[in-house]
Image (cartoon, rainbow over all chains, first blue to last red; front, side, top):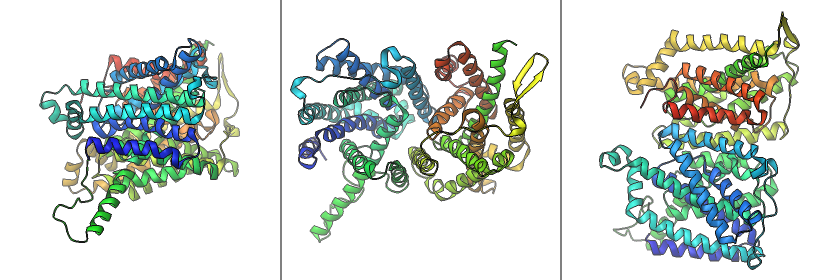
Length: 321
Length: 286
């Protein structure tokens, strides 16, 4: 799939959400977690880095926006720019510590860092409100209703999506894929892989920080739970269930997760148990996630419609990576 | 008696518990080459199984034995039924399966035992304090130190003195080589994963009279176990012991100086060790 089709599909999705959903907040939430999942996918799908610390940057973004809007009364764009900057700075710090290690150590260090930031936020009550979080985050009058806010989030989402498409298509993005596929070879070819990893980590942290800031503005609060392990896990699960290595897959994953959570959590508070089972199924049986499933269905349908065996039919493993 | 001496002894007790918690993670990684994210969930499960057995009026000694046995059997079955099919697949998926498993265990615990925490008294014969001149100390905490010391000795013997142990250690160096020597090393994988789950569960039962049981403590236990193996070096028995004791003592001392920072101290210690020795105290540069 080329860049234009992907962008167009994302736009269709963003325009369809208001038609399909009744709640503007729910639609905004889908796009906000899609942003966070895109950032996670950039690490997992494009660089092969499994990060359990995405909640750190999400939480940092929430706190930053809350502090800048309530204490300094900055305009919204500046507050969000602050969230991006703090998310990036946090990622640089965590990345500098974790990227020195590889494989299992990297994964464990991201989780340990997530716990460290959680306890920092928990103890620094003057800045974060501790267990209570930060409350009463204002939103400008131009986005006072959920659907107006959705429009604002949607514009930001499309811009970030377009930027990420460019990044993944660039030489930089191709180098990340080379690192993912074979780190030793990329090193041998002369790439400074630690620098590349740190750069992609910072980009990921910046986007996640932005998502956290948007989330704080949506709910009006910056709770401690935005920085908890649970948030890191949720972002990662969305990314994996959607499917890695394709940007649209993360959007699909976010829509699936948020809508499923909205529906199931009212039926059965312990619905996360089913999610755990789904995660096991995806990891053991369908490693390309929901996106891979959709691709397989579409290509099979296309084959059925054609009837005749076309010489260049796309097989289930085809399509973009 | 000096409060610092008291807190150091407390720290050794907590540190030995941390050792029992982390050693299984370390051994499993050594042989199976992936990080088990369900390790904290087995600790959680052990605590709740222990709680249930005690609630049925069974003796603490029985709970200490039976709860790890059940968790170990579950771990063994998980490896046989789930993980076993995955070794040819990409590394991330091993981790993600265990993340899913951890979620299932945590939510199942809430379904069975509810979302609220529970506290447990030490068994009658371990209640009260030991008075030895100036030295006054809770009996249960002394028991934990003695019990875990014996356990550490047993585990060391299992790894260094038995045929199973030598297969595990050889398998950690090279799985292919051990297979070529005609040993069905993949059969050992299930036993080792079960052993890892059992030790985590044992730590959960031992910690029960000190920390109680609440459904979300698995994540914190997992993070602590990670910190310990990062400090000590993955796959190293001695590393888990040194890392566990170090974290336990640092945390206990901090809880006298500034109680809110006690949990934070665990991660500060880790960051400091990694700055000075990037591969851990006993780890080798890759």
